[in-house]
Length: 598
Picture 1 (tube, rainbow, N blue to C red):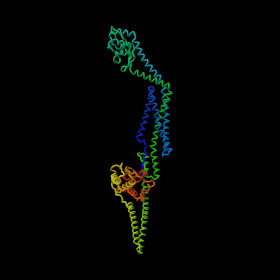
Picture 2 (picture 1 turned 45 degrees about the vertical axis):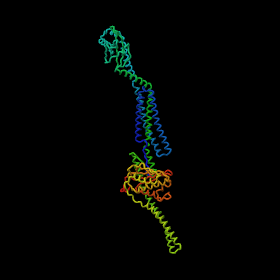
Picture 3 (picture 1 turned 30 degrees about the vertical axis):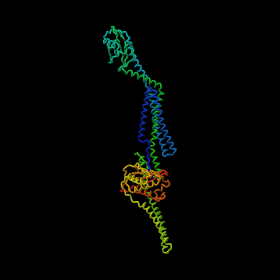
Picture 4 (picture 1 turned 180 degrees about the vertical axis):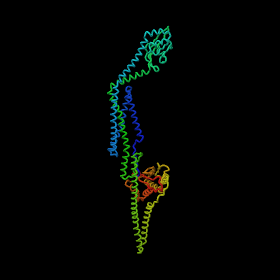
């Protein structure tokens, strides 16, 4: 049989592991994002965000759990079918699951304890009173400013000052600022909306007349630049000219932002303080809800890693079984460079040595077979010698006795002698062709050109059979005896054509294979003939074995002898009614000087 090779690398490969690592870090990123959204921005969560988080938190673990359940069911089925390595795989899965669980328990306890301690610390600190005080101070500050502006603008002093202004607005503004330091700006418009006067402590730009035209009293807050403004509008007629006075108080814009943040933080902290027990439970719940997918992902990765570990062991077990059954051509392939790869290489080397020893043993058996053939040939030669001897003796006897019918006896005896001699000559010629094969004269040969040359010759002899040369690279060079290699193809093609009396197809394809440290070129010659009976396959290379009516039983024996002289290998696979495939392994890169010593 030929070298049937197997690979033990799993289906995921390096890219699969990279994807798993990517999903692992993606899960961690999602956990961080969702935890911040849920735990730090509770007040900002909307129903859509809540639903999205819940869907992701439910669907992702369900997908992981489904994949794990599928792998568990597959493992149960493998155990039920007594698949090699199933029990070891079960033990390794349980081992990895136990390791993951044992790692998760102390981390979970530590995390829960830390969360409880942190929450207790947060609520034991007097943060809420501080927030309440800060909010009260900021609100009171704003109200005082607003009240001061309102009271001052309604005061009798301001009305008197407006009457005394008399167009001297600079002196008017100076007196107002001296009386009420909270006033930050003063602006005066005439009836056309032109600015008659503007003064500001904070370099504020002037107001727009449209904002105050037709209005009076305290106006709503207004954002302008880096400030928040409180304005009070007083329409006034001075010296028969109607004027509009605007008095304002300014706050930095950050004042509103800080006040809003204090209010928001106060509301959140009050809610947390009110539901701190429930909050503690929710945080722990979210921790487990996020930790559980990581645990499932660890179990899934363990399944994949176990497949990588168990595959070479299973393949080695299968290979050992095949070798024990007598198949010394079985090989296990390895793309790795780890200890298992070294073990696989050692196994392949051992099998190669066993194969070589077995090959030598087979040759010894063949020598014994040749001795049997020689004895059989001697017996076959001896059989016709008896009638030859008897015929000659009868002729001599009748001649000496002057027998009256001597003429007839002479003719019949000579015919019998000639017939038996012809049988001997035919037998010896057939055996001579088999036994006197010359030693190969090796030379570098383009195997594809040789195949095409022989196929073209037999294509012309049998037009009902179609030849197809496929998957053979150009310029494939092997060292061989050109004449003998052609004889191999001629015998195999002739047998294939005889197996397809009504026509058919012959496919020839080639590939490179490795056996131990040697490179071979493997040819497959497949025909669509009536096939070989299963019970006849072990005998087809035995000399004088034939199933053909006029066959000599030496054609395939000669083919095998030539392949053996080239230190190659030949075997056959066939099925009745389907066809036959001959496999030929010929060494590559070996010349006649090396004597093929391997």
